[in-house]
Amino acid sequence: MALEMTTDTESAMDTTISAPPAVSAEGETLKMRGRDVKVFYGDKQALHGVDLDVRKNQVTALIGPSGCGKSTFLRCLNRMNDTIDICRVEGDILLDNDDVYDPRIDVVELRARVGMVFQKPNPFPKSIFENVAYGPRIHGLAQSKADLEEIVASSLQRAGLFEEVKDRLDEPGTGLSGGQQQRLCIARAIAVSPEVILMDEPCSALDPIATAKVEELIDELRQNYTIVIVTHSMQQAARVSQRTAFFHLGTLVEEGLTNDIFTNPKDQRTQDYITGRFG
Amino acid sequence: MKDHIVSSFNEELKELAGRVVEMGGLAETLVHDAVSALLRQDRELATRTIAADRRLDNMQAELEELCISVIARRQPMASDLRDIIAAMRISNDLERVGDMAKNIAKRTLAIESEFNNKQLAVGVEHMSDLALEQLKAVLDAYTSGDLEVVQRVHLRDDEVDALYTSLFRQLLTYMMEDPRSITMCAHLLFCAKNIERIGDHATNIAENIYYMISGNQLPADRPKTDELADSSAV
Image (cartoon, rainbow over all chains, first blue to last red; front, top):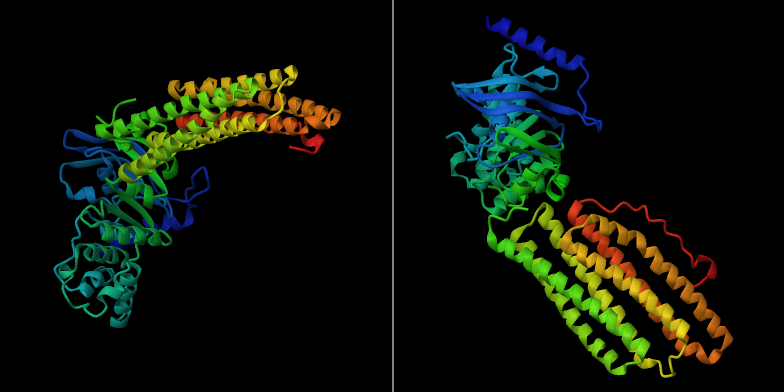
């Protein structure tokens, strides 16, 4: 049974390689595509048919007032909404050409491809090393102990944390500062070589210096990964993203180049929100 | 447009706009007075104009400081950001307009010979009327947000340029006819150039207002014919 499951998953993934990647009008590769995405929490509809593309190797920021549906949309991208019983998702979410909600997709596999970093740093109550090693180990990414050590070191390096923790890898991850913990979580996310990293307000619990380090990191990670970030800080969205999507009342109001959104938004609601005139 | 949730931010933006309008009024007065002083050989008015320009300079410095402080404290976005940037640029242009007026006033004091050529006086006056009209139109548009006026001003700058070109030729002729008039004519030529540049600043302001309101650059469809190209002097 388990073996069949794997084969099916693989065949679903196989189509990815053969089909050409979708591209935007400007010729940029679309890593993820949301089409007419509707989300219900019980009777309440949280998203009303959202069409949104995520471009490869770019940072896409989702902004909007609380309850606008931006986090809900983010959580659709790697099926984090599955954990909520009353949550129902309609429409299509495509990762390359794979339907994320295809029943044959292995959700654990999917979340390795589409990793996530949360608002509050949430390291496992284990050592720094184990925090990063856990993912590669369960996904069988390391052939040997040396291999695993290499993955842990390089992930910590890419997360800009290695220099700070290299002498105390066996100390608990929870003993680090907030900013270090968040970078540890980012290292943990990238240890399984994801294609997309979702970030849900990754800096809202951090001080400005730690925030700057994470933002610098986001910019570096963009070379190798596609990033979608939900943020309440408009300045942060403006600083880190190439494209910005503004959500309001469960709809996507406007999406475009970050530069355009923050200097010359097309929609009055976007204008009112980003200039602090809402409500 | 709706008000900001933070009302003190609203107040600051209003304050900025108010100061731009005030600077505009003063700049207009300076130009008007400087040209009157020149045409009537009113040395007393010229002296006052020179002194008044300092006030405009101070206003510009204060406005710029306020803009920087608002940017630093509020991190403005979208139309707010454009408003502030436009206020800063427009105040810069107005400050330069004041400098042009001051220069005309200084030349008024320098011209010692009698300014008695009616034809030249009419030419300078006509030019300054047109430049002032342009300046007034953009300053009104700054308050009203009328993009049509802005575009019209942008297109009409050619008229000021053409008047300058014809005045330039006239002055050359006088200088060739009577070398004793060279000093006065040279001063007048610079005055005319100053007025022409006031027209250019009005055009700049028009462009900034267009950007402030629409978020786009004013389309550059203005045919720029360089009528001085063949006379080998600018």
